[in-house]
Length: 196
Image (cartoon, rainbow, N blue to C red; front, side, top):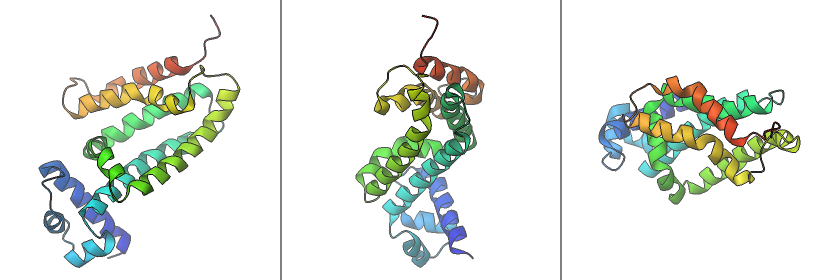
């Protein structure tokens, strides 16, 4: 079996165990049993349980980032760019609810762990690419004067909170039902109004 396929099997087995038993209660042996991998294979690919947690986290945010960046073409207008943050987020969460739940609950753990620097580096690189794409819209005056470090929080905050509620079973309607509404709210929050 190819190494990348084995790594994916281990990560998906880990996610299944984390979902079923919780991150703290899941042992490396449980992941090994679920994945069918040898203990040597687990340690070869990851080294320990914390690295499995970090790798699963990084892969999940990487998937969302790739989905977002693929859509954020230079040809998109400012409104489409902002709305894409929300629609990509909703789409990814709906397809991967267990992974999304894992990511929402384990950021601090990964940041504080041995893979924290890799996470910070990923965030710097991804953030830089996003800032470059959004810069031309900012310079063209499409957005309100919002500090750069605050911009994404304003855009993604409401959908992230709604996703948390949906993932926890507190929302009665499917998250996808609010996709367009949340995208419109994000755009209304950051766009510079010219009619005032």
